[in-house]
Amino acid sequence: MIPTVIETTDQRMLEIVNKVRNGERLTLEDGVYLYESDDILTIGQLANEVNLRKNGKKVYFIENMTLYFTNVCESHCAFCNFRRDEGEEGAYTLSGEEMIAYVEQHIHPGVREFHITGGHNQHVPFQYYVDSLKALHEHFPEVTIKAYTAAEIEFFTRISGMSTKEVLMALQQAGLKSLTGGGAEILSDQYRQKMKVEKANVDQYLDVHRTAHQLGMKTHTTMLYGAIESHEDRVRHMTQIRELQDETGGFMVFIPLSMQPRNKNAGIMRRNSAFEDLKTIAISRLMLDNIQHIKAYFINIGVQLTQMALAFGASDVHGTLVRERISHAAGANTPEGLTRKELIWLIKGAGRIPVERDTFYNEIEVHE
Image 1 (tube, helix red, strand yellow):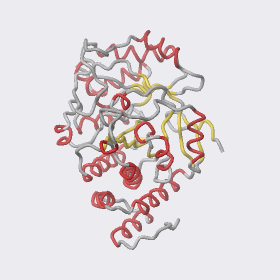
Image 2: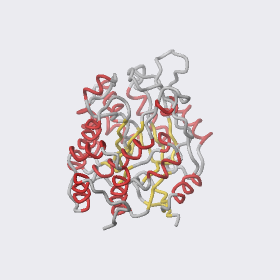
Image 3: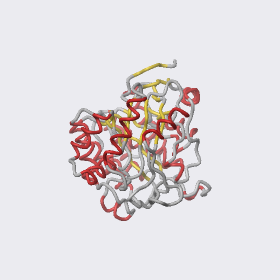
Image 4: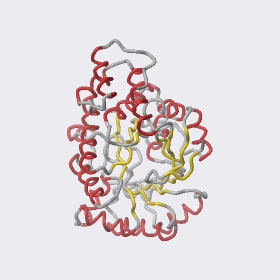
């Protein structure tokens, strides 16, 4: 047992501390209580204990590139500033050859993963999305393809007339190895209606990942927080992910995504506080006892807060990215990517051990 630096006298908090230290699962009510508490030091230290038990002082990162074949999208989600309508200024849809040319221009030795998401472009057939992956896989066979959100997969079923399983199998044959975690937002259909999330509903999101896991894929999952949702909505989101993980064991990492304002010049009152970001990472670590990693996403919370998050339960800092666009279209004022050396510096600066990984958390190099 690692004692907390500051011992709490709050009886309810002590009950939660004892549950965590005894390996008991936290309830929805426990999670909500943690969100409503201002005792961030106890919450953070408890999350740190859990993470140290699971991962020691190792913190993982990957050399990857973000790719976006199209920003044309049928959906009009209230929080998205990336999407465009067909023919609108700034709208684009790249062919496989155009994307290959882009990659050849920007790729650097050591890139192990393509992270691919984009719009739900109803003006091209499903085969376009298959061919896009196939072209990349054929030209860069050594790079793992992590592509498409569960919402994109659900969209593909509608434009193709195929089942979720058939869509995933076709993409696997083209080179797909893992799904990205996006499209989850908040797993509440009421929230999704209010926020005009015009894509996969809660059951569809979970079913896509369930099917992917049944096909042998390991996947990622997210939570976009900081809009209209309640603390209970956030914790309920986590418990639904936890329940699916109990069923399939297919999630590798949970990624809390801090909502970005529409304008990167927006003042601090339009952004989540550092207090809220750290608390959300810590509570994620405490609630999701069956997922190995919690990711601190520097694109959304910034480099220095990412360092702090490593003492609040996070064990992953994502990757080099190379020109992230979606969060920056929404107003992120962070770097569009970091170099391998910068990620190693970031992790060592937090007193942790940087571990370069592949998509599936196999260790490539440990930087003691």
